[in-house]
Every structure is written in structure tokens, then in C-alpha cells.
Length: 176
Image 1 (cartoon, rainbow, N blue to C red):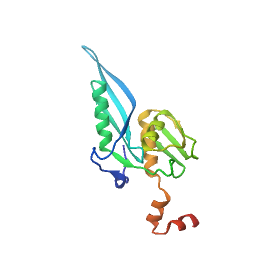
Image 2: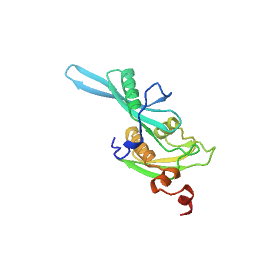
Image 3: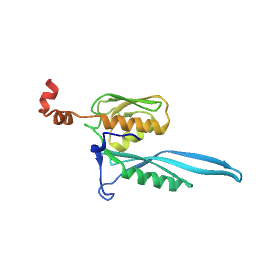
Image 4: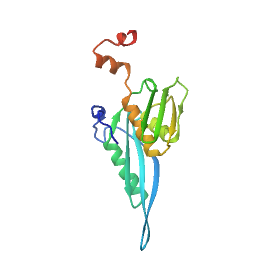
């Protein structure tokens, strides 16, 4: 995944520091046909997060499902990012594209819940986003949807970040 420019948001933690929730997004069986018959391998896509704005995802491939899932979890734990979550929702509306997948996200009022497709729903739940309206347009391939959603979440900035970047007080951001 190309996340250039977001290295400053990467979270480096020891695995014992925080309890991470893990969700398997998809398991894909890949078949290689050889002269001796078919050989099956598995690719697992996993999202992990602490429910408070730290989230990551990983891909693992192996000859058995459990080995693929374990590799994916280890990969996801090595690539954790901090995303903006404000009062259980996202700070602002955003649209992002990755491959043929286009994702659209909008903040929602408290109590709305996660209104999103399967792959996005899993990512939001481990990230700690409780209220959001989201839509997938184009391809719904789990890999591309996950990468587009992650890219969008990393581009989001809350009012405190904007004020800090501009070097102005928080009130001036809202009053112009």
C-alpha cells in the first residue's frame, strides 16, 4: 500500500502495550494447477485496532488457513496508524479512491451507528468509529476497499491538527 507522507502518523508500540482487537476480513483460496494435481494456498486479510483511533491491516499467505491468519495478524501489528476520531465519528466528509474502489464517508450524529459495507464496517469497528455514514462505489474487492478506506482515514485532520499546522488558536480556525 502506498502511504507516502503518512509516516509521521505511524504508531510504533511494543505488542504488550495495548490490547488489540483482531478481525479477519477475508480469506482467499488460491489454486495452482500442476502436473501432479492442484495445490491450494490461502491469503488472509486482517484488521487490528485498539478501539481508540489506532488501526492497522495486514496480509498473510500460507499453505494453511491458520498460518495465513497468524502471518496477517503479525503484519498488521507491525503497521499501526493513528487516525482522527472525534466523539466517536470522523472529523469531516471525504471521498477516496484506490484501484477501482471509491469510498465515500460522512460524519454522523451520535446513535446513528456504522452505516457501511462489510469491509469498511470491520475497519471502523476496530478503529473506534461508532457513528459514520459510508458508501462503496465501484469495485467491492476487500483489498482495494480496505486500502481506500485506510488512505481516507489517514488524510483526515481534526480542528486541533489544523490549528497546530497553521500556528493559530483553535477559535481562529472556526471563525476564519
